[in-house]
Length: 236
Image (cartoon, rainbow, N blue to C red):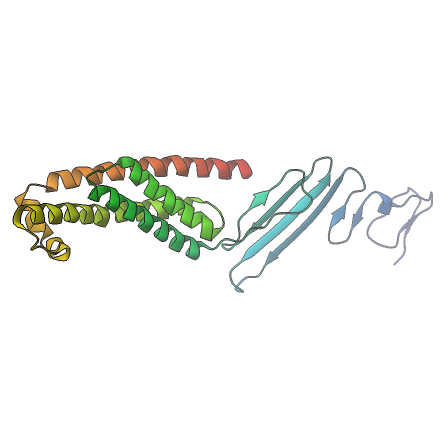
């Protein structure tokens, strides 16, 4: 259908203006919007529904006020970059990140045990355990997020228990062999640890060291968690 308007307007069809004006020079609507001025706005959204339950979205604007953004489902993160003409998409691997956090926490636990075997217990090692877990999570996940903080905190708290237990067992094993001769094996002492801990009144010191480790780990987690949440707010 063709319509001719004498007032110079044209809308979504084969409409021509008698005065030679065509709105296609100012606005063109065909599934997207393109403005010939200083801004170019484009939009695309894709919802795959049951296909992996992933939602994705993409938008950008170029010109004097440029920005780029990307949002998607659980396998992707969201970035906004001022002055960019295309989004930066970074895939996340949270399963691998959790394994990385476990590995980092175990490494920190070995350090805690080694220092304890030398007769020292330091809260700074507890902080080191947390940050090693964080580093492992970030390395394998691809970025630091609040889940990584929680996972690193949990692994850090859990690993301190056997690490402290092992360091106390080593100290008891060395003391028993020094006092009664070399008739005690390390694993035998570990098996009888509750009895030795009760006999020599070591439970109170053991619990104090755990509390100290938990306190330092918690402080580190609060600091990193607050920084992570603040950083996410700034990118939105």
